Image (cartoon, rainbow, N blue to C red; front, side):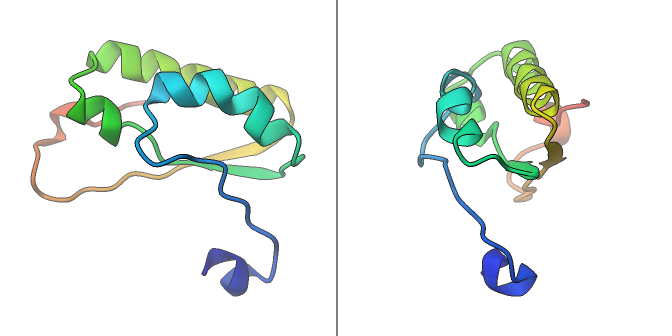
Length: 93
């Protein structure tokens, strides 16, 4: 839908169930082959479900953002609030 709305190609390199650590390990292979101008990051929910420490999740997200920016791409961090959990897991980047 995003590709149709933007009139631009959109490539989803994520795998369902990825944690921030898994995404961090895969980012160079999955993303840089595509030479993106913008990378949308929507991660952290699976870390929460697997009870990964909040600090580890934040550290991984910060590293993901730094790697994306180092390649010259813009980063958009997306978040989902379901109303089921408190904002305790919200991240400040």
